[in-house]
Image (tube, rainbow, N blue to C red; front, top):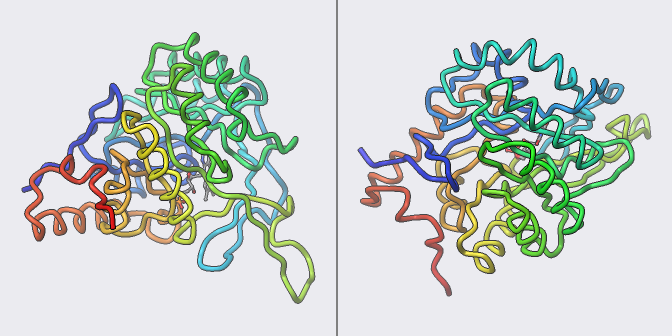
Length: 303
Ligand SMILES: Cc1cc2nc3c(=O)[nH]c(=O)nc-3n(C[C@H](O)[C@H](O)[C@H](O)COP(=O)(O)O)c2cc1C
């Protein structure tokens, strides 16, 4: 059988598949539903320094083959998270990464310190959620993104990933900034900004109007970010994320330069998607005589 283990910066993963933040709840509450056995890691829902209530309904909608969400990062705050989720982390069938979100660099540092105390295996900083009330996105400004990563780097020794936005026009600049500030890898990408309107009611599909767009239509946008980053900064470890639903999608991200791939929206219609996708990946590797996925990473050929 081909080797599907991989390396993302300082982290060794038994599988290149990662369950994406916010699509498997706090991880604990979905552990009986989602089959984590074929994943290398699972990322918990982003957590903030204080409780956030999230947005009012409607918060999710179908849209053009993908999904719009405007959850607004509803979460219990880091203190409650440590109490509720922390004690259960060691019983999970997969290493759990925590995800930090906040409105300031100090807030990110506070959450990351709490995640480390709770026992997560790594920290992802969510610099790219489009649902925060003041509309600010750290991931669109190299200086703001770097200041968050640097504060978090000082707060925790855990492996650290920075999750960025497909809305960044010059993605390599943002990647260079967060890597320079101490990130170990980048996650490319979070959702893209999107909106939709119900033509019968004439109302927006989300209470917050603009939300995050995910699912298959996001894949080309995220692949653009992965490929440009790998072209400009070939040593930067990348977790690809956006629209993965098949083993072939995983291969596409690997070829563009990702070392691992996160699965998100697919979990809502198929909680055990990871198992099927891993099987399809193995079948592809066997068919093409690939012994290890390392042979594929960054292997896209020029025209
Ligand atoms: C309902 C929903 C909630 C999400 N919540 C989070 C979150 O809390 N933190 C985060 O970093 N990303 C969050 N995301 C983004 C996903 O982790 C992922 O980056 C994005 O959906 C793109 O991947 P996909 O097309 O496979 O879903 C969320 C996505 C959805 C659809």
